[in-house]
Length: 194
Image (tube, rainbow, N blue to C red; front, side, top):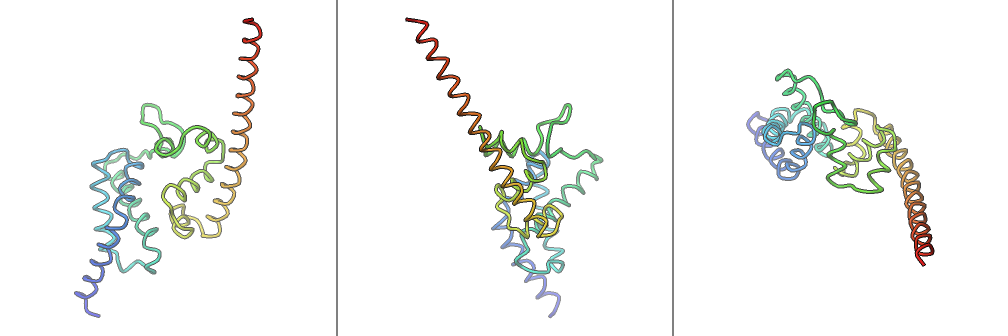
């Protein structure tokens, strides 16, 4: 193979990745950095870096996770370059800072009982659930994004789903109890008002 052919193959492959994953990589970086303009620039940088490092991709089916890793590293490098060493916390709030990445992700798509149930489960399980469900990552992509083995990622995700089921059941029970209490209060008021 000559070098020109490899560059053309890399260009075509990365253009395909760009068409398919540009939006989700941008959204990931926006949530990570909380700056749309910087995220747009770094999204472009991530795809340029993917092109330059095309030869490091071992299997085409791992391209999405590989792309997330590149985008994550590009963002961290930029933060370090700017000497903004603090990272946006996944959970909780930083004093004087915007809401955490987790808070932003949950507010984008979740509300009510599901949000409260997610808040009750362990952080690592919650992160796995949000990555798997909000970003629709495969098991291998999830493992790469979390920096763990595929088996460990599956175990964390399975425990997370079970924890979420239990927390949702508790939320539903709590809502039923609150509704029953409201009904009882209205019944008492109605009897007292006669």
